[in-house]
Image (cartoon, rainbow, N blue to C red; front, side):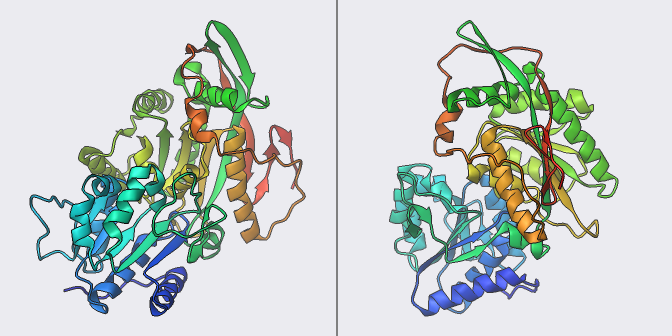
Length: 451
């Protein structure tokens, strides 16, 4: 049997549940909650599961997540409210009557839609990080096939997302953008003391590479085409260029200073792919003298390493995509954004790893993010800074704003130039280009700024 959670729900979680009850009363069978990463979506969603199972007598619950590690994380969180969710379900073993439901990945759903459709009939379904269902047409179609027979579907996301070419089942859109039934913003999460604010340090400087035997040397202040800007970012983040080392050293120094008042504080560096993660882990070790914990893929070994890191005092975690979304490591205070992905969704998810407030240290907690001064990334940092500034009621006169770049092509930008011979030159150097902190920008593209 299940039991009611004894945890104290936050104000926003109570509001979200009120929204849920109102929708159920109106006969709605699918809703979307948009809550900023780090705010506690899991706890609120589990209250929906409890109500569906206990009061509405659904036969079971199915939770769908993007990664294997999140399967374990959800199952662990469910246990705290008396729910037993099977995170190791296989069709051969079946679902034991001891379980209230199961946790599976979107990939599992796409592979066996008919099997999970049988289990989902009349059930309550939670679709975590629902935007992943738009990663491919097959995943979206599988969701519709699998969960059409569910009694109720709650979709969760950390921020609004576009439909692009594939609309996602169970999501309502307005002018191509997801339209949630309930929103909990990052700005309000700071105001409610649910999340930390973030200080951004953007790094400029020059970087060089050779492309088809042609030497290219550019700085981050240079205005470039999307393709050249993507190659500049790629070159800067390649350790052999010498550019990234200065940013790593500063991030480590900030972590050491943060540890003076928060001894368990840790740093997260996210890389573009597995080989890039290995290279940056070696560079970080050379700079800091400390070997980071390295997680490369979404497998059981990586999940174990993440759990161990969560409860250890190790200073640095280097990872690819899997840690940047959903994984709960509250002691993370410093982040290095060293991937070439420039989408808003991915960037927000990364920042979400750094902002979970911890009971200690008491008083104001700030997270610190280090990133290249790429115009697209700078714009994303500016948007978050603007939300913080609104909360802090600080309205300084600002300098010339950076025009919002078109992010729609950022996915393609990551791969542009891959056909050309691309060799990074040594001798690059990075320096702090702008500091965006506590609602005020101290410098913008290298120009002094006085609040």
